[in-house]
Image (cartoon, helix red, strand yellow):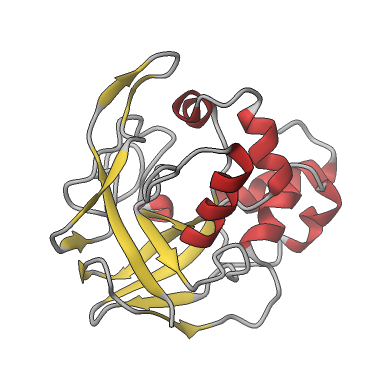
Length: 219
């Protein structure tokens, strides 16, 4: 059974080399309300009430309302890096257990607990803030090569979530484009870009980027 191992919220803090950021997310023991935050940059930022998104030009918004990462993948990284990685260490809102996040299809829907429905939208692309937060030399390259990016989700039905809630995949679209495939297409395997343009549930910015790159135009 797939479950939410923890719900993680961040507060604004100054991070050397990155400025003010909300990437430092910690598990909370209370239920958290999840809702669609609105479009960037004018919306609420995060889909989780009480969570902070500092750079709303690049982060948060309806297509990046919730970020999920698998506990199993954190465990792999912990062994690889030789350090403990608590839930929330990658800045994820939901640390999951028993769920293949990298293999999730774009547009598939998860019911979380009794109320919330989330839809898989896109992978996380590593940035300088993530690198500064982890403090690992060459982190962006290392993370990219591993190609286990975690998934952003939009909120289809709002409601309350808490640690221990079951996560059930309730809808899977009729295509084979996964979080992992989109990530590899956008980073190290551009030959996969052709698969992205046909997936309507991908955010427009991703599909447009794929079209431009396929046509040879500048990204």
